[in-house]
Image (cartoon, each protein chain N blue to C red):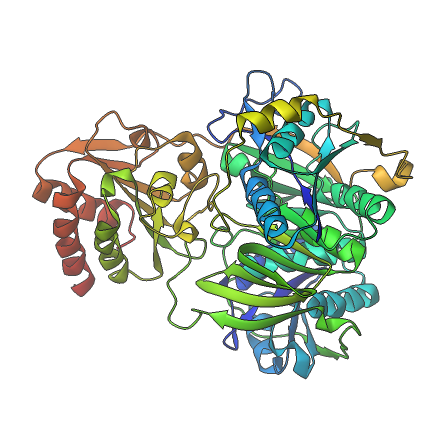
Length: 260
Length: 325
């Protein structure tokens, strides 16, 4: 099975987000960056499928040079190959543009792919757009927010999370799957894997080499501003006996908040 | 025209879709254009009246026996054909599991930019501006879409439903076929839909537990409390989920769900930054924690310093009393 996994470099979830002086971006200095957690589930799933069925796993990222470190992590986890698509634009919050780049890459370089794995969203832009958009551009099926996956004989069965339950979807391959927490427990890289990944050259491809220029790579999104969320006014904090606390909470919910 | 895709479940219109339609109507009014709704399904025409009352001047009915069960490709194709005919300025979806699956597929088909999970929509200088949380709510991004049409998903529980008016307007039936290659993805089964728990994204009230719950057996206390309240769901912090105490679908925070309920009741949750990001847009936050220094108290409207195991049973009695009054 020929599997492609798409990964993104994002600030870790404990990061405090500071707004840049232009009021349109996030300050990256001082942040700790990781592979987006949902992409890690996608990566792990790809490795498990390969271990069961054989084949090849290629990890791909679209972004700046700094993203190479997460491709090295993928190699250390066990990916066979990594490919870096160099994008001169900083974060544009535009899923359509990224999906166009990915679809073009897949058509040009991976015509025999069978499975495309993504995280269900990148932590940060929180868009949840690229997997479905890529599937549409390639004219193939999709299953998003997948918590269980089985691949057998040209078909995939995916259990996807929906409100209050799950949907079991049967897809003809090739297909796009986006991973949700719960799909698996990602492995840690081994020391040997890390050492090996350090030495591996990672091929690079530019947007021009994919034949993308001008309008193809123009964002569909214009950022107007990035701002901090409205601060919550400090509330009341009380102590007391359990009876007293329960009564006070109930009184607050009934009287002040008018919820109960 | 601003078109809203209406989601149907058990032959009823989802509340989140009426919220999206309400915001479409308000936005359309600011632009001096009409708002419309589209329903895709097997037999859905009877739902049109409710949509005309809910803000739509026009309701498009796309019926096909094959549409009874949701398929991303079928619905995307039907909507793309309609969009080609009526050329809407924008198409709104509710930010539900279905909306988040369908909207990007349609966006790619139409070459349209998409604003995901919007919590505010404004008009400035004749341009629609979409505001949405990024980093699970640690920052807000306001954007414009440079495409025609513009697509947006709207977070459930944020926008008010349009006050029901007299149902006046037009119902338009459009023919709708299915794509030739529609066997590519089929929903084989829906598991746990009937009588399933309320999802945290759709709940009006979330009763949430963290590390202070001490073990999986104690989440029953939260479920009991949730059962007493309308449209209430049980939530959890990452540490509770990662300890295996409760399923990840309950997780609130940056690697879980970002929620905006009317009430978020946090028990034994310290308030890690990634958790607070996911729930700080709740309308009212109440926290119970043993530790008076817990960061959760910085965002809570009402905080109680105490032992949750002693407070919950008593709170349950107080709520029962209030509910019976």
